[in-house]
Image 1 (cartoon, rainbow, N blue to C red):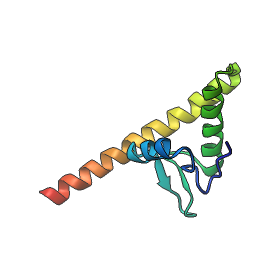
Image 2: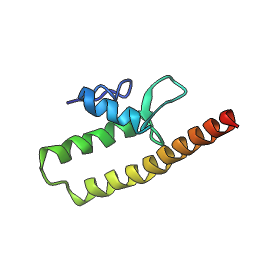
Image 3: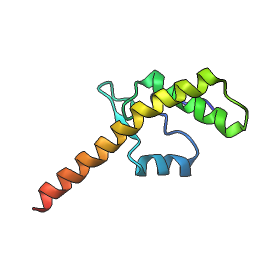
Image 4: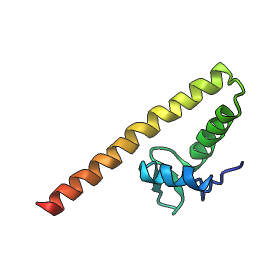
Length: 94
C-alpha cells in the first residue's frame, strides 16, 4: 500500500484512528499531514518500513538503522506534542 505524504493516515481505518488518537500526526506549514518530527518524504519512508515489517520479510541492517533513526526523531516530537496539549488543558482548567 502506498502512502502519499499528503494523506499518510489513509491506511486501514482502525490503524488510522489509532495513529490519530496517539497524536502521531501533525499538519506542517504546507498543510500536509505528517508524522510529528518528520518531513513528508520521511513520513513516507517511515511507513514503507512499517509496511515491510508487516510482511514478515527481513529488513537489511541499513533499513533497520534508518527506521530507528526516524523513530528516534518522531517519538520525542510526538511526546512533546502530548505534553504541550496537556499543559494547555491544565491552563484552561485553572
